Image (cartoon, each protein chain N blue to C red):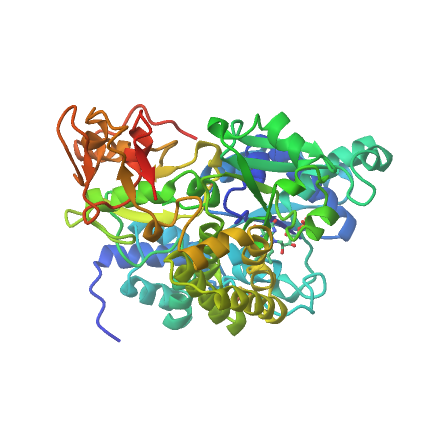
Amino acid sequence: MVCNADEGDPGAFMDRSILEGDPHSVIEAMAICGYCICSDTGLVYIRAEYPLAIERLKIAINQAEEYGLLGDDILGTGFSFKIELRYGAGAFVCGEETALIHSMEGLRGEPTVKPPFPSVSGYMGKPTNVNNVETFANIPVIINKGAGWFNKIGTEKSKGTKVFALAGKINNVGLIEVPMGTTLREVIYDIGGGIKDGKEFKSVQTGGPSGGCLTKKFLDTPIDYENLGAAGSMMGSGGMIVMDEDDCMVSIAKFYLEFTLEESCGKCSPCRIGNKRLHEILDKITQGNGDLEDIERLKVLSNVIKDTSLCGLGQSSPNPVLSTIANFENEYLAHVLEGKCPAGQCKSLVHYVINEELCNGCTLCFRNCPVGAITGERRVAHFIDQSLCIKCGVCFEKCKFNAITVN
Amino acid sequence: MPKIKLSENTVQTIKSVCAEFDNKESELINVLHKVQGKLGYLPAEVQEVIAKGLNTSVARVYGVVTFYSYFTMIPRGEFPISICMGTACYVRGAEQVLGEFKRQLKVEVGESTPDGKFSLNCLRCVGACGLAPVVTIGEKVFGRVAPTQVKEIIAEYRQGCASENAKSA
Ligand SMILES: Cc1cc2nc3c(=O)[nH]c(=O)nc-3n(C[C@H](O)[C@H](O)[C@H](O)COP(=O)(O)O)c2cc1C
Ligand code: SF4
Ligand code: FES
């Protein structure tokens, strides 16, 4: 049996914190799981990027062995169980269970078609059970307190609690554990303390590169598997990235596709080539060269990729594109019809200009510009040379008089 | 096959790592981790020695090395700089920080400075998203990095002492 601690979803760190904070809960659950399915070996597939988690897990395994909670004939029951570690090497797709198994066998982490499912033929051709760290960590508590207790928490179909990693433009970042069915509003405003710098909430991305972006209109939707799915996103591992008015949704979709392109294993063509085409179209739009047909093309291609890819990565990779088109079509339209980026993020579409009436010549922007594109003297309005400007936005952030505008 | 120009010592090191894992082909990834840990990178010649040690083809080894982003075939700098490009860091301005590192060091992602001091890379999430944007230099983690701090950070490393005010994650 295998514990999946690959946590490839960028922006999520639940598994890491469980492994660093309470590795014994995972070890105990793995032993219980081994007992149930008559397995004597547990493998933990863990990311090499988490050195501290690896170290703590090793310590915990040694401790468990010393106490006789792992090893031969555990507590005189005749049941033996050992846990070994296997290291990942920086490939998102290895979180997919078949790819993970190939990676543990020392191969390239490419997924294979299911069936056969790992539970029929997995690691070294043997039946293999794959579960996530968080899933395991729930088990000891449920056994101690009983299923009735667990079933009381959550909604009718999604039971229990879920850990989310709140990150992005929010005041309180970190891990939270809430009962299923909590609304996004409660999570973002009550627990997260609202949006950073008093800006306006725009969107929250759940489910990582496979998920989608939810808007204001979903703020009061209870979070559970069914509702997130219906809203075009997914629960995924539980990453939650909050975005504010300054984030351009076309760029966000492009960002996720860059991730997919890098992480696609390249085995099947819809994912390898299709996502590349999606990325090219999005790039064209952010450059201001897109047209209305491009948006249509994005939709058609996305659906083809979803329907024809081999593994979950390709099947879900167009989700960020589809959900941003569905929820922020206006923004796409502004890019293609007016050549404008409403959030002021797309570099090719913005210019920083100094408003001479508001500028009092404090020289702050002039001193901070990393490329010396700003000229001007003290107490005289400054000027930005557009041919030198690299559009880093430093002047805009520094100006205390709102004299710099983004066009 | 080109002649192997590695020092006898290096070849021995690699062989002993292979032996440690019983020269088993299925342990390839573990062997690569260990060898990279010792040598810093995995150039073609090293891969040939490993292939021999594990009794498999060089193509198989090369296929695995190139598949995983953790393995590298080019030497990293004395201070390997990695910018997190995970989602949390991205929305908090990692791109600008990366741009500033590129300009200051005059290298592209995946390259090293000519003096071998710094190399620049991107990675996806070190699990310190609360501190976004995150930059790691060697083992050290810098949180909430602003583009304007970049120059300072590089200067401190140039002088040979690591920044003390770095927040570790
Ligand atoms: C592209 C892709 C990436 C995945 N990444 C992870 C991951 O990083 N961690 C994880 O636990 N499961 C990941 N999964 C899900 C696993 O395939 C598998 O469903 C999961 O480990 C089962 O555990 P659970 O039933 O306990 O949730 C991924 C799936 C896909 C398709
Ligand atoms: S969908 Fe993408 S990641 Fe999955 S098997 Fe196909 S190419 Fe590989
Ligand atoms: S996204 Fe950068 S540390 Fe997680």
